[in-house]
Length: 610
Image (cartoon, rainbow, N blue to C red; front, side, top):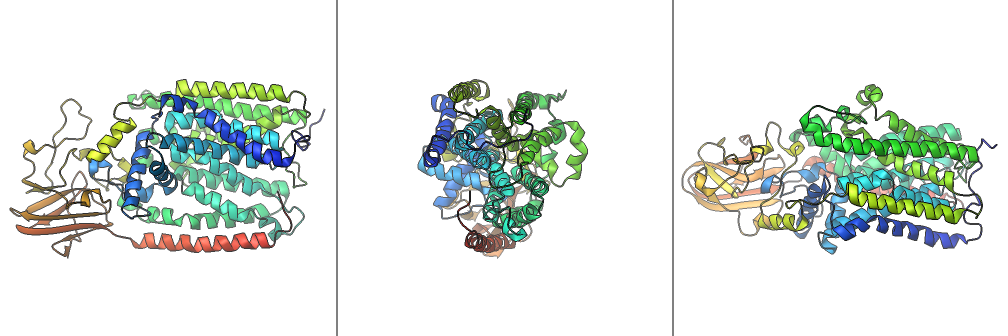
């Protein structure tokens, strides 16, 4: 019996032209992604855990574009119209893509299109990785399998975590370019710069520009894949490529991460990991908690625990089957027969990180607690599991292929039906797209994110239905009153409460502008003007031409400006900070370096390589 992998060359395309599969393979994957979206096409949007947060970001981004702001930093509708610096700290790729789709499609259809595009991209990226070792047909099967993996559909329907979902596309590409060995007989530099370093930088930057936990995973995945590749190929080339590609990728993404890093002390970013529901130690697989706050958290944890065990079991089981059949995936361009080792390591290491035994490493490795949920690592398991599955089940000859294809198609349809029933989240009235659009156009705003509130402030104290500005005698005065029927809700303001001595609206047209406010008014008596605008150091405030350099602090975090009796001209404008300019320059320089690297790799790359 064979114990050593012999690869899969000649399996699946012997009687079919390569050109045929170059067209049909990707087309089948796109079709599979469309099939996975059938439940939403029939039932409408699945309003998963993060659906409303991301939809609001897309709408705010599109509004900024319409005001001539290509890269917005301030989201005006959170905190019930007081806004927050969400776009400074949340990676821009998916909220910009969502905004672009919202400009093309109706808003209720834009999330469906984005989910479809992400699923299709995940399948195509997995197929590209599989093509390093498998033929077209089994590689296409691997791409389809990645689409219908439990975690893909769970993320798409149950969670609607669009930025995190992008990892199903970026992570296979990071592994692909880290493991490529297109010039095995060349020198160290020739092997390192074989046309893979530039796209590796782009894939790594894409992860950083999509989601912060994803960027942490991409960093460790790149390091681990490069180290194993160096051991398998017995060369330093993968490590050299990873170092340069990762560094260049960070430079490309600097337009985002550099301002986010330097301005994080302006917000309470610790809430992103300090909340009990976000603590990784409360998210071990099959964990149970007596705390009622974590009741819903435990429901999701049980779901994802079974998904995790199933995916790892499939990956390990298929690895054993492929080993026994002698069909372990072997890289076509390399003399090494151990290309499968990094793929096999990913699900095993991932499972280790999901149980308490891994706690010391979570505290030792930099930024690991920022992942919040250990099961986020399942994003990295999808492609290896799918490739090992295809290698294990795809027949050597033509006999039996139709049976395998039919069985897989039936399983994929069953997975879609299950997701449409069990994972699908019916929209509440307040989460429905039509209702959210109505609230947005009315200027009512939405709930904010705690990690973006000013240090020492509490955004749950921001009153709803506030006027644009409120004149008070005491700068710390509470503006709204608690809601009797809902003690957990933000306080509500009404003119009859008498908390404002006078109210003033922003100048015509300014209310819709994300990064500019102005008020022209006659102040009846001296006092303090509380603006419906969350305080942030990037705001530059002028009162009758004089800059306010020291602002009083309020418990709700709103801007408060002292005003004298008489005519008032107040302006609030968003400023470009020095770290934003530095990030732009670093990204611009990195783009130039990327172009030079791409041209250099193409110039010295002999012939056409796969």
